[in-house]
Length: 599
Image (tube, rainbow, N blue to C red; front, side, top):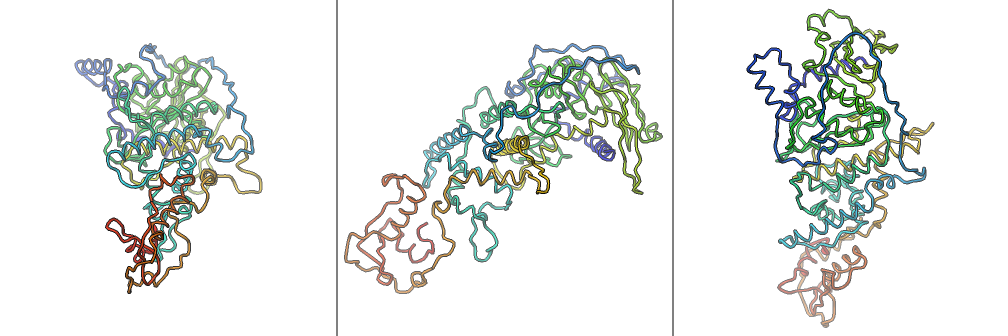
């Protein structure tokens, strides 16, 4: 634990400057220590912070929990080394699912708590609408309206593709004799052309931009999943607020660059997650600055925490944050709403106790495990020394306690170090969002120009993980004497259960496993058209295409079948097979040159 805290402190110190965007810089100005500025600069900086107005391109509902009239009135922070008594609200909510779950439920049934038939039905409707619009503009090819079972199978295939990672999606359907180890059984469920067709037209909105909403293409899924995540689960007392990234490198005004993060380019997402189970409880995407006047005391990062914590305030929850979010004014604001804050802090915060700060020279002389603290009302400011000094702020911990942590030395001896409750709990609960982000990571190598598809994939992964957490509340994921039930096995079960309603072997243009190739038909020798002696014989190629389409689309009528059965009075004199020979037909050539002539 000590090594973890030390490495975390080094990382935060090195990345503190580099990860600040324009959005983050505005908050840093609000908290900037103006001691070293002259009078003119202080007045100019004060005017900028107090009347900061930003762009008008943001959706006003991005942070629904923060109202402009909710202006926080700051108090004077007087820090002393006297332990103050707090009146903490006792957390009493029942943690876990809000509905009664049956232990016999299948994995896909947990997933469909969030992606219900209603959601899939809307995706089907919007995808068919998008296909109709694009095809009216000139898109070619045969299109059959998407069905509910087909979209479920499509999503099941996507989940499998996230596990079996190929650089090119065509390789999942590979039947190359040279590369015979490639390929999968996905081709038994859905043809390659049909899969790419669905992916081409997949859509989640009616493309009507309301109130300059930059996320209107996924607004339906955002609102639905946010409500579902919050209504289906009650998180533990400890929750974490942090940021995550949806990888995207295309041209996009929402794109952020954070060079010290594993995902350096992408769309930033703020997340509130259960610190124990990593359940994604609330989220919001950063889409730019908004029109509201930013309160100079709380700042923009405080607004993020307040908005995400709105559904859980007045209940006694503890929120753990890193130094980007933590500030004395935010902790005091949340304390008034019976919600408590704990996190590391930046040392240049204006209202953080200056007497607590240590110089680099003094820090080098300190022994590991050294600490000190100050209190102002319910707020506790403290530091703890390991390899470096880490500064904390908490509104729910006592200054001292009997907790200790153990450090592993190079000579394999253990050195116990005194450690306050703040340090212990912070190291234990700060990783909730990071664990969620690791389990729902996206494949950065799969390129796409549709940014909203990346957001939908991230939401789907969060829904899968939340479903896995719900299953873990009624099913023992670590049964004695058996292999643990992990997230991978859960995903595979969901994928195959979504696909089960598509019968094997009924896909469009199915290629058989083994094909007896007629060498005489393909030898390109003496194939001449001759009269067949009858004008009522069906063309072999046209009839084969017609039957394959009918098999893969049960219920299709003769009129709706795009492959018409043609009659021909000619046939191949060598093969004795009736074939079309007209100016608009290639059946004769296809039959004698293609192995799979029905495609």
